[in-house]
Length: 135
Image (cartoon, helix red, strand yellow):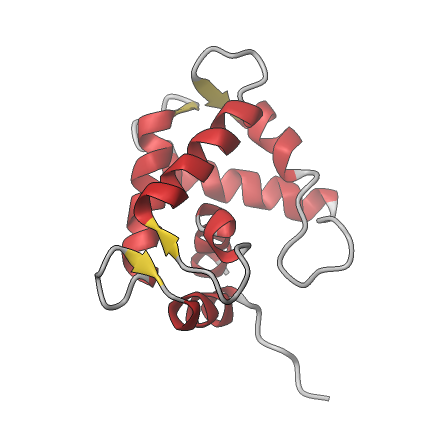
């Protein structure tokens, strides 16, 4: 489950782009920086768990009709921090967040051309989508 949630959060801005569009690394980083700034409620350049939790509480996972449950939001916050707060000081810097985004971008840019194509985007969506239970 951890493998599915972390990439979903880190790459959400890329995957939300229309399927016919391409995302460059520069565009993905610009989106990440805008999200970081919007999430940094006290404007100190650091994200706390409370700030991230407040932002995640209003997220919808791709294809979901309703927001995350409080339990899902809490779990996602914990997992994101565990992965992104690399120095374990309880705060995430823009550099730490950018490093996570870079890792996820590289993972989904399978041909390593600096662009996530529509086909790579669909493959990434499939990779982070939870499996459908058989009926």
